[in-house]
Amino acid sequence: MTLDPQPLAPALAAAERAGWATVRVDLDGVRDKAGLMRRWEAALRLPDWFGGNWDALADALIDLSWLPPAPGRLLAVTSWQGYAAARPADWETLREVLREAVAHWREAGGADGALEVVLADAP
Image (tube, rainbow, N blue to C red; front, side):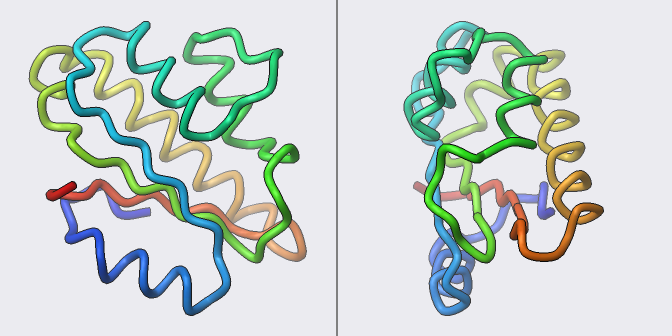
């Protein structure tokens, strides 16, 4: 998992070459936790059980069963700097949720695919 800002295009191109599904989570204008959860819900097309809290997001990121099968998934988080500045504690919680989800998929390995996250420094 890359949690340092990276250019988006190379990461997307590499994922597509590998047959991975890509999801962009654009956080432009998001300044509160409720808005953050709505963005994740919309980007991932989360199921009805999604509760809009940290635990529900963590559960969703280790499930992903409602998404089409793929050898891996790349989540590209863009325009995140405003949220990180406005909500530094929540930003750190989000980073931890993402780290744990990536670790889960790495440990699971095999036919279930993989999950990687990149924080893009440009939209």
